[in-house]
Length: 129
Image (cartoon, rainbow, N blue to C red; front, side, top):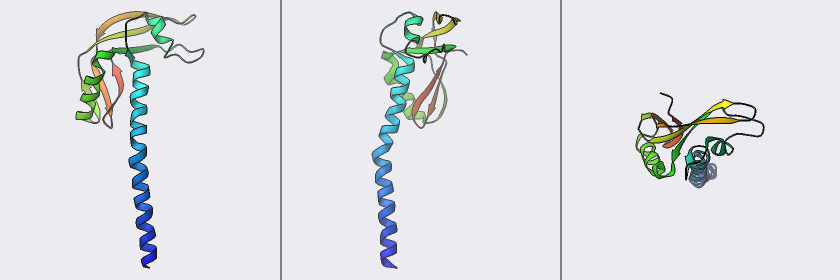
């Protein structure tokens, strides 16, 4: 009986250890995905910025880009709020599809209206409100 209890405790400890080790990797992937899809270091044309977003032979309808200088602030907002939609105002670049063949986009500078956070990480930026 004691041996069975000991094995159960060891399995629980191993499971906890795995969670602790792999949780940061999962959370970092969210940041990396956000950076790839929504962060711009310097302004460019929407056609140029959307090349990184669109898959092969695809034209995403629209995307919102936030300037890199605001990234830390966005991350902080989500850490404090954890989960939900947070109204915030940042200067952003909004790219909206103007034609499909070839993919081309209209460039608009506007204000970010909403940040969606999940588990303390930003997962969506929306400037369409």
